[in-house]
Figure (cartoon, rainbow, N blue to C red):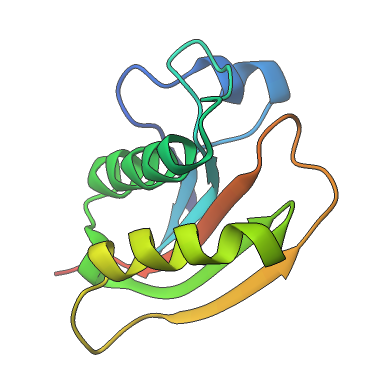
Length: 130
């Protein structure tokens, strides 16, 4: 079995330490990224929804980079939404900016009733390039 190694982006430790989890785990040629939210550097939620989604993707990019990956290396994407019916247009707008060309990663969107004060969360699995 391949060892698992914790990966953390620079300057993003408050939420990880407060809730005792790793930003990502590298195992073999895969990077398993924990749910990324639109948190500021102190761990507090960005209050504006569109800005929160953009910040979640920025935090995702930083975590992928720390693990040696980029957005094009994502193979599996799961997003969590507190109010999918009212949030979906905003999320689709931002998602289409970030993933603008095929092939797109596969995607599962899940409606939830609580995200620890956040309204959007995104987790991914990425293949680490050679």
